[in-house]
Image 1 (cartoon, helix red, strand yellow):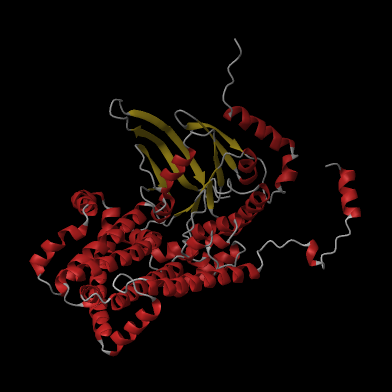
Image 2 (spheres, rainbow over the protein chains, first blue to last red):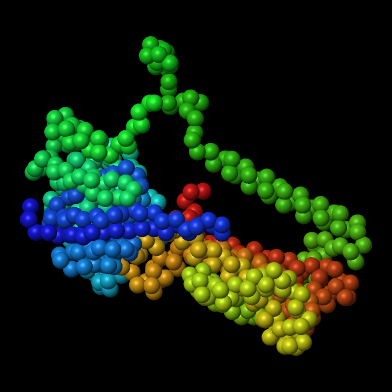
Length: 267
Length: 281
């Protein structure tokens, strides 16, 4: 893994204003407070935390879908404020365009960039092969299973050849078996393409299995509580096997203690 | 159920799947569909038969019956009257419906997407939407006279609203996550409009067009009643005034035929354009 810094999040803060009704004041919700971290090139980082810790907001800020109040997001040292072809986004619900075939969905980003049809097609075919759906290109999203839709969502994000892939709980709506299958696929695709991946999840096992590092976020306001290095290197064994590893269990217990809400003692 | 019970069932059941009585179909058999058609045809034959028999008992001034209408139809076709009226009506219908579609879709897309356009127009849209448009027909005739212009104006006005209202709600109902996809892939505003909002709102737009055709035909007939110069509506008035009820039915039936054909045509186009919306049924 290169030690080069691919993405830096520098002192990012975000507060949402919630407009009150006619008789109530506006309230403010500090979602992120002074969040800073670096992500190295080719690294997979998971953002994990209890719900409401702002992990999805953070991901959307990095993508440029939400403006930040303070701080900066830098890709290769350059500040970014808007979505760009250097970052690809995979949504929680695959969010495919239902009127487009799988192939046309993969081509979407390239089409927006004005890439000619022939090279779009080539690129789409290459990516359909990468995600294992080269024969399903002409099918429409409603004809595909949830797992296949999410593969197309991944192919669509990869089609514009971004150096960073931002993934917002992409496997959370899938059944357990499909989820593990796609986790394995994602690791393979990452090895083949060398993309830097930032992965939001609330699944501890998924975070450990996929990542080089796990960033544990705390809530109210969201901030980085702890950065955990995952000790496994090289090609990992399958998740069920990995679960038996004592180091896995140790990290999992640590993360669990960081995330779970303090239980009030009985009086 | 315990394990032994399950074993018993599988042992005792000498299930023979080649025996059709043992297998339940998941899909209703085809015969039920053809049976429904037989019922439908019986119903049609019965209704027309009853109409024919009962219609003959009534004074022909008040009611006519199928064979008399058919004779009148042949006469109106032979003397060319029906064709002239049809041509005139269809011409007004096509022109005014064209206006309604263009204005309804364009304005609907803009009002649905841009708050400023909405603020500039919603008061007049709401006011006109709530007004029964035929109420201003006498005024329209004062402005434009009894010719085609008055017809075209009133038909366009009637047909534009379902198209407009449906297009607006089509744009409003574009799923936010699809707009998000456009934003995430750095789409420009015009690309979001063309590649996300337009296709997503398309089924609503087609529904508006289908409803608009119904309105347009009503508007056309009412306008032709008033102007009573040309078209199928005028033909109805003419034979009504002559107490020739059988002949009066001919343009009425033709109008209902036009209504059925056009709206099923639009429905067909609708399903071709948005196949993903019709798979759940």
